[in-house]
Length: 172
Image (cartoon, rainbow, N blue to C red):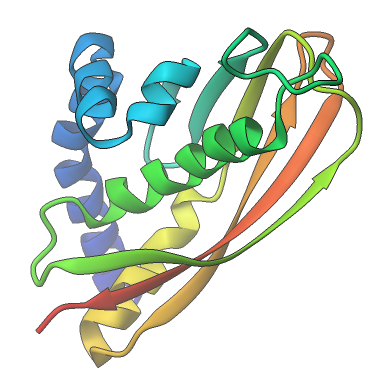
């Protein structure tokens, strides 16, 4: 069992490198956003890091992201936080055989203070994804996984915390 897990784990890591290279290429990823997520492009969501274990995204306070209270609008924060979790899911299912569909089925958020300046969202749940991917591939049933993204401002204070529930299912 342990050997099988390690083999599967290392195979997942090898296939991720191509996806990570695409996402970590700023120009290519900005073109992807422009084509498929234009609001994230307009709002200026950036990917700072994507690895097997974590994803880090940022969003800055500005004219496109502001609310009437002179802070980042909650939906813009949610967009950057969701991207940090979604990138980890996409990283885990990239070029998977069989293909795996992904969909957000629930999200929760807690806001601790005004989001001013540059907010960094970090999701460290990537290593947990492997067990869910293997489970849906083996059973063909849908699985759900909760991924947490924490928003930190430039002073290091927690601004917000998001929990996104992703549904994953291997396609037949």
